[in-house]
Image 1 (spheres, helix red, strand yellow):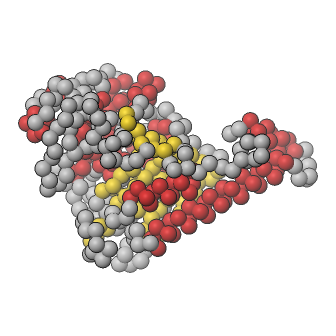
Image 2 (tube, helix red, strand yellow; image 1 turned 45 degrees about the vertical axis):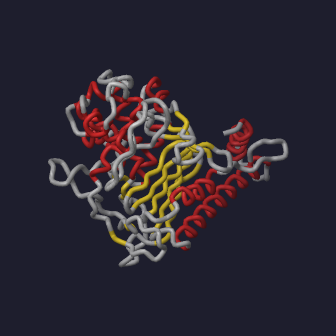
Image 3 (cartoon, one colour; image 1 turned 180 degrees about the vertical axis):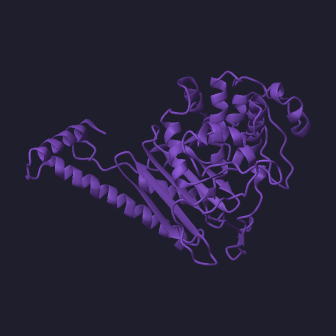
Length: 382
């Protein structure tokens, strides 16, 4: 809040207490702020409607929270293409690569507890694993390089042979392999599953009742992939033809995504988590600094205008605003959760289909909500 607004707010309170009824610059500014907020939310709802109207997916939700105003939740389209049931608050959905922020946080908490270090090598914890499966040298790859995707390890896509590994520390290569290895290290360092560590360290303390890592079906502790209530998850299974068949893949086993992208959550839970993480409530200062120390993603073919930390990334919007958080794309579900650096303004959105232009859709939504406010002639925010 600017000094102008702080002083104006105090003046407005004083006048109300004194019983004044006159119109003041402060009350005018307050109404302008309310109108601006209402216009932004109307614009966001319009953007949600356009996503569905343009054939971008069955249904979309967005929840915005600002420390200065009441939360806003909007929907468009349907949760179930068969029954026509609308999307609603409290739905569980797969969050894809937003899982990496949870995994990275757990690793950094273990670093703070001196159970491992970011400079530990993969070979120390997983001797022979990357050598046998990827042809890389685990003695040259550190935990930090796993988390910021500079390990040189290629991404692994189902049904495709992985590319050759590169020299660690050379450049950013976004890879699910990095985080699945990090998840394995967490389990070796703690003697518990990553799902248990996420529940114990993050979900339970933050009261994230809808957030969990399902686990591998058939193994102890595993549960249904997506808890009720949930939207159905729809996919064209990689077909680019606009007329391609749409499949309901809600029950699909995506346990392969694991520490890199296997979690389920809700819009409200993601707000609580990101607010706590950005606000510095989950990590000591040294580990917080490590998490938000970034490497460039330029030239990697990944998300434009981003820099990657240890499970989270920054993204500069076309309007010039830089946000922090992450996105997730997985079969039947696309999500984005980002906010300002302090976590005081956060937008979380989910689409229950996977054939949309992922980056363009969410860029439009976040531009709508985070573009800079108008300024008065003297340059003061209004």
